[in-house]
Structures are given as C-alpha cells and as structure tokens.
Length: 321
Image 1 (spheres, rainbow, N blue to C red):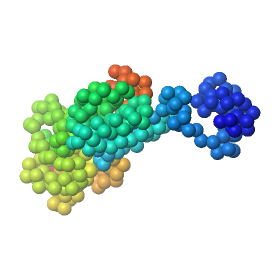
Image 2: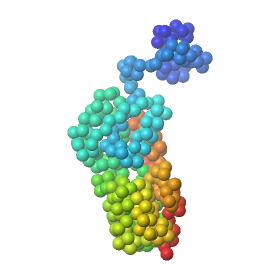
Image 3: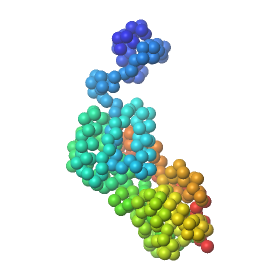
C-alpha cells in the first residue's frame, strides 16, 4: 500500500478508502489510485483486510448433495450473487447421512471466519444434524422445502399443483406421479402438491411411482405407467421425464398423443426434448439473491417468503384421446 500511495501521490489512508469503496474519495483520485495498483500489480490481501476490519467478506456454503441439478445450480447462483454483493464464497461438502461430517463442515467454515452460512440442504438428515449446533453467524437453508428455520425455498407444493393443473385443464382425469426419492424434502413436497391438486379438483388419487431423479429411473417407470392405465404423468424432475419420454417412445406410445408428460425444474435441455417438455421453472437466481441478502443482513421474515414457481407450457401436453 505504501508503494501504491507513493506512485499515486496520495496517503495510505486514501488508498485504504479506495480499496474499501469509501464514498468520500474524488473520482479522479480513485482513478489515479487504481491506475497505480494496476501498474504495480497490487492485489489486496483479504486475510490482512479481515484482521483490520474484523470482516472477512466471505460467506460459507455447506452442501450435502451437489450432484443433482437443483443443488448444483443453486451453488453456482450463490457464488454469483455473493460476488455481486462484494463477497466471496467458501464451500464445504458433507454426506447428509453422516452427522459428524456435517458438523465438521460447519466447523471448517466457521474457522474460515465466514460472516454467514448458506446450507444447501435437500435432506432432512442435514437439517437434523444442524439443529443442536450453536454456530454464531447467520445460517440460511436452501431446498429445505419450508422445513427448519430460517429457510428459503421455491414453493414446491405450489409448483406441483401447477403441473397437475396443466394436465387437468387439458382434460386428464387419470394422472400418475413419478416421484423423487423419499428422503428428499422437495420430493416429499411435490408429492404432497400432486395429491392436494387432485383432491381440490375432485379427482381420484393417482398412482405414485418412486424414482431416483435419474433419467434411468424414468425409463424404468414405463411399465408401471402403462399398467396403471393413466393418460398423463407428472414427473418430479425433468431428468426423469426425459427417461420416461424415451421409454414411452420405445413402447410405441406417442407423447402427447397417448400420454401427456409434465416435468419440474426447467433445465436448459428441456426446451430441446422431443417433444419439448412442459415443466415447472424454479428461479434459482432469485433464491440465491435472497439467501445472500439474508445471510449478510440477517433473515428478515419478508426475505424468507417462498419463491413462486412458474409453469412453462410447451408441447408435451395435449387433451386425452
């Protein structure tokens, strides 16, 4: 900083103010300081800055499952939102089924001096492991489907109801649900929304076929779908819907001519399936923006309101024959 100050012809205090985006520095002085930093190859030492300001400007992200689309997309969105807010992200990963690993991951993040922690927690087991911890910084959970507090989630049940409503509005009365794994909170909420919308419309409860989020489990579900005699399927994610589409095609059944299909997530490929997949979109960017704001500033109740899902209508739904 002494070298930068000497090159720019200012005090070290002025350099510090520029580094910390202080408003009381003239624009031309800021430009001169930043030019000196560029000429000298100066990089701010965040560890030293944290010692001086007692702020690390770092958020922790704890993930118990980063392989599926929703959690992985959320982690990327969290990093981008934190960067926009002037923060960096330190990530730790732990097996949801290993309570000791979850606790160790939290301890690791706290030791990094993070100012808040966002827990990408799609499993009840992760939340249970956190219940008895006294962490000392704000903790926000994502993908907890409204379980635990404070938590942020897209309204999963409402999204499932949108999916079922799209099928029912097209005239379908026999609708199956290709569900996600039973130990996932969002899978549970989507199944609840499926049942609630059928009941609200006076339709018989539809069969529930359990999958594992993979396209392979959607493909394997074709036999059960055919045996059930339904004319439509709500798949709990787009990957399972993809496998289902392929299996139905191999079985000689047309989508949507013989069976209509709706997915969930609106992954980037969904618009290019054949047929293009009607699905429910989750706004992961908005979810991450709210989570970062809550972790930095404390979790106001309004910030933790569920994010509304959106139905994306494409060509995989048609009236039943």
